[in-house]
Image 1 (cartoon, helix red, strand yellow):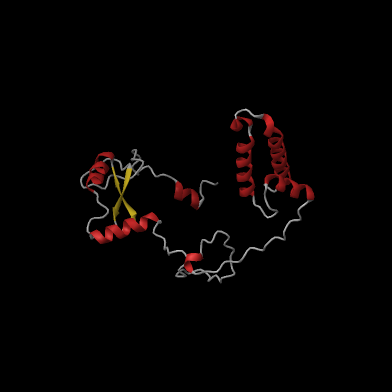
Image 2: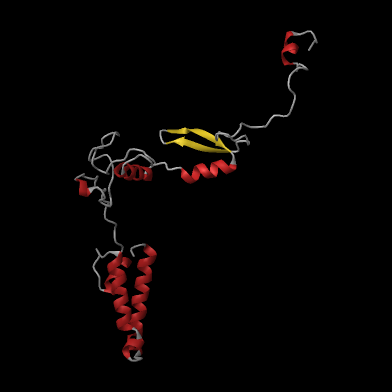
Length: 198
């Protein structure tokens, strides 16, 4: 840059200006205080985004006497605290339809656990899977346990426990006569587990 440039004249420091060191930040807003303002404090409830600038001593004094809820009625304070739980965002009861979102029809969502039944919504019915073909070995294993072909997992497990207790040698005073029957029951149950029936 040339020394006779108009830009150079604008940024040049003139010797008649005060060159003494100035504080880095603003001064304390407390009346009569000349210390550097190192802390911020909110002004009041309707002006939360505006702040006072205080030194450490005066910010402590200000915070000690500051009350955000001063001038509010007890009901207004309770309402504010209740709204603070949700971050002051609008809420509504689930399933009442008093929300700004789109209305969902009865066939809009699956409800396999019947969560929305209490609100009168009809959930989509689950598609029934076609019945699984039962093989002869599975039928034989179910007969060994004394169950029908339509038995579910809980029934098979409960029946297995009953039969093991009944035919175990310890339950029959050490009699080994029922040991073969117990072995057949265990093998039938293991087979049913391996096929995924139970």
